[in-house]
Length: 227
Image (cartoon, rainbow, N blue to C red):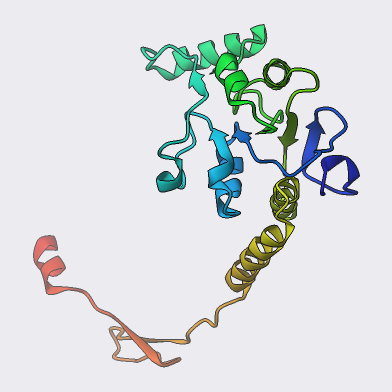
């Protein structure tokens, strides 16, 4: 069983407890849209018991999944300076920008919670997630993993990590292999077509350099407007 605690290099900045799961995760709470997409890409949407109010992809697989967070910013805020002031105040007081339904998390009894603590305004505050997880599971509670990839390689490691925690390592490897092939195809330089420019100057000379011809002419319409 893969675990953050045993990886030599992994994108998990922190995790609760020993970093070990007694069995593959079956009841997953995702507090990150990106983590939600990873879980679904691994074919594990049926193991999601809750996601955030911002998780909207893939839409068909999330239709009936409960939302466990909400936005704490007053909806009447419209101006950028008002929003900035509210965000700064929420962060400085440690309240954060998002509410977490702790009673709902306890009812759902997750065994794995995916979150992050890299950005203070991107998700529920990490200490609050840990507290909610402790209350939810009784005793050690569910395992909480803070995913914080900083590169594409880390993103691929995140996929493998989540796959390992769910006991579907082969799916993780297959997903990474497919994404790697797509990335390699994008990075392959395309051949630039040679362009032939045929420029008619006032002297009647023509500049030819390739197969594609681009004619530079002055439209009669423009002459009429200028006149």
